[in-house]
Image 1 (cartoon, helix red, strand yellow):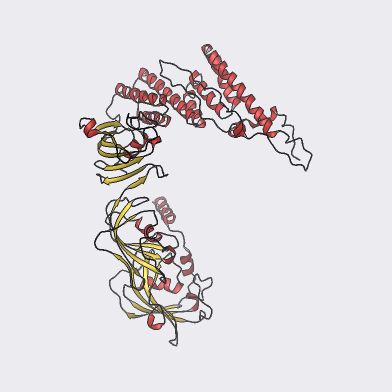
Image 2: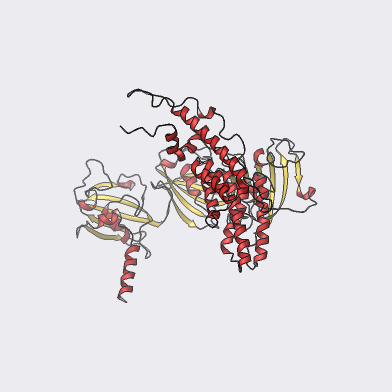
Length: 617
């Protein structure tokens, strides 16, 4: 029992909050340095706690009743209450201790010694010269209200108090179209702006149509939410849709977020825009179609010419039947699929798509010119998620794997390497939950898994992810070090990153374990030799004259710009093909820079150049 109690005590100590600066200040308070007298009782039972915003009037007097400073207009103040956040704002120590003892509406007098107000050592709040900070003072406080707030900017320039919760969790973002009721008042209650009747206030989020602070606050709201957004003048920039505010330190905006239309800049460059026309069912994005879902849509495609020429309409050209396609299989233009993946069932959306994401890289309808921007109006009727393998026997699983692998192979041949990679990754991930029941099933499972890893390696070669390609090959070679195709593909990946010694070792090992691979291995070694020579030739040009100068002289390395040189790859990189195993052909991977291929073999390179004899002086 003693051990259990000790461990529980340790857990409690670990969960304790770190000591804040305010807590350290409190520990320095001498006894009797703060006294409170109640002038008017407050209402309720709750008192402010850390994180609450407090709004209060404050009048500071000397002990003989002379007013030193006040927020009240009758004592020379501006009439605007102070607004601070406990635990966030800079507050004198006496009030930091005093506020948590007060009720809403309460008026109290605090007698504060100098070390608890502006006379505190390293006081975080400054005062003007001539302020009696070394005297004992009276602070008359009226706590007008306090409430929980959301801190939107770290400098406390924008805060939000929720008056009524909204629905869902989706919030406006650029470039959503937002409808709201909005009114604004200065700190003393003067109405500055009001739009609460007639047509709702409509603006486009992220276009600087409203003050920055107000937009930041609305960006944290959900549909139907009502809130007060407190904005200081640092965030009250001039904007075209609201009158400019001068001579006001802050504005309290009361906002009711009525509705917003989801508008998404899918590519981030303004070319592929999806605009929601009708809300769907469910929550975004949790209820949007996943990868490998079967989608059923109605859509109408049109050109962006004056006539808005319609080139396809499922309600007419498909005998009124919905169009079905499975996501992640490259069966529709890329822009079409990207946008439908962002839709909810029942949603209707308008999509404006650039040619390179429409039909320039996809079979083009006869009446769509090359290079044409298009517009689709899409209704996502519903979708079905891909079935998992729960309840499948081993044969049913392997049959499904063959279908998915076949789709991946088709995508690879079409040059859609990312989509192909996703297919292989999906199967390999699900393979972690497959348990063969006998040796025959185990052998089939292992062989299929090896093929998937090699196909992944081929995709990674094409996308320039050479290190990951090596890792995929290693997963095969760890179990079978003599796997010829894995050795070949890893050798090609090593060659691509300039690890020539490792590549040469793999090609030589191929020939030692399989004599029939000599022709392929020798061709790869010949190519490797040519690439080494080319790399060394370029390196000599880059370092030409570098070591020929006398001490103190400046030499310039290299001659021509690397970009002016001939390409590193003059032909395709091949992989061993085996029709029986449906292995993919790994053709030429994307070229890499000369330097990224130089550094892995720096030691060999400098030895070849005769630079290994240099000493550090």
